[in-house]
Amino acid sequence: MDLKLDGKVALVTGSSKGIGEGIARGLAREGAIVIVHGRNRIKAEEVAHDIIAQGGRAYAVVGDLTNEDEVQRLTDEAQAFANLVRIVINNAGGSGETEDWSTTQPETWAAGYDRNVLASVRVTTRLLPSMRKAKWGRVVNISSLAALMPPPKRPDYAAAKAAMIAMTASLAKAVAMDGITANTVSPGTVRSISLEEAFRKAAVNQGLAADAPWMDIEQKVLPMFAQVPMGRVGTLEEIADAIAFLVSPRASYITGANLRLDGGMWPGL
Image (cartoon, rainbow, N blue to C red; front, side, top):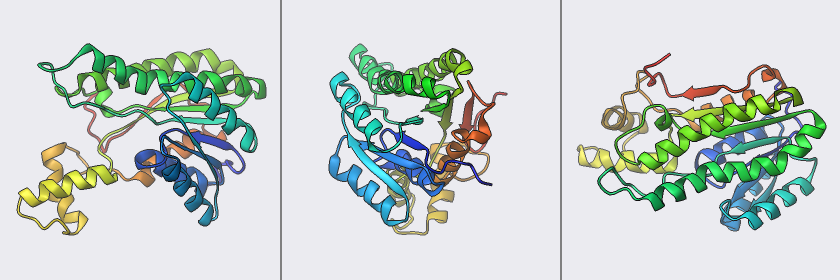
């Protein structure tokens, strides 16, 4: 299926590694011009250069999304590289400190909200005007299954990610008449570098070799981390493919949705 993304410019925040990098690479495979973002210029440029080496088109921007001036600068740079940005994937964020209800501090909640929710607001509000003028745009905010199934630890993270779902629903209604869609994607357990490292470390404690085949590691360790009905973790490619469809013209009637990519973990409707 042709997703009709050739030449569309997509800014993917937090794409110098992890899920964001996977999303950037997936969009580039579909023909989009990808703007890789990170706080480390070397890492962001490495991803952009590798995308180019694979036949894609990419640029790199750097900046701290909790800093207003840096967000203004990097979004201005992004708008000047090629065509104007029409696709925004707000992926940057993260869980921060590992706290529970006996140790959590208000400062942690404020920092997590700033890093996840407000960072997305800063980027989106700066790029919306040109989307509205063009009568076409796509915004995807990356939440987490933790927003729907909050664990006892990291309550600040679950709350921030839940706020992103509500924020997206509001945005979708506000821009619905402007040819812009806004959706949330909530990944569950996904095979990233950090997850694989955690799994392999746990596997050693269970008697497996650290370099055992991934399928053996996954089968042994996954039940310790999450009860996934599919019996496996998701892949970066699966996340990227879902997002590529959501931001394509073929998904023009999908807005305000929260797409769960969790292998069936969510117990609700």
